[in-house]
Length: 235
Image (cartoon, rainbow, N blue to C red; front, side):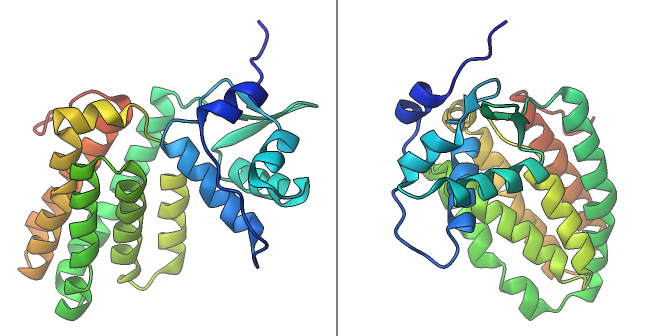
């Protein structure tokens, strides 16, 4: 079976901003590519070449190749010899493993924060929770996912363990969401978004048991979104 080329498809399938000279083109390009992955504009099984992407960005091939190699380390894409890079297809087993690890790390950590984090630190997360809900309601998937990532990593950072935050960040980077437009229409994305407010309310009430329950339910819901199927809260 011949692997489809992404050169022609990518040029029309997603729009990449032409970047001016910046201090870190590598990071800028990486962010743009992650956004394309999240939006589903770059799809599993399609090979994307560095020269084509460099033309789209209006830069040399070097920062594009470096950004793509960063995404390889994050297990978002994989190299295809003499052709370019292909978006990895995640299996249900992959998603289950990430879900299990996130639950093992995040649920007890968040429960501890109900007693350890200051009320001022927790209240500072409210604007991010608002932005998550607004992004979901507006169907702005990039905003939704970026603010969701920032919310969870900033919350975990309150535990004072940078390695824990880095590990969860890597786990989150290994997963991508597809078919979110349909979930927005069904209202399921908003339902998941408002759980961030529920979690903050529990933490501000110093209710560790409730915070733990909300966090566990939220991770189950996220797993359901990954699979584009509903999750049973009581499962």
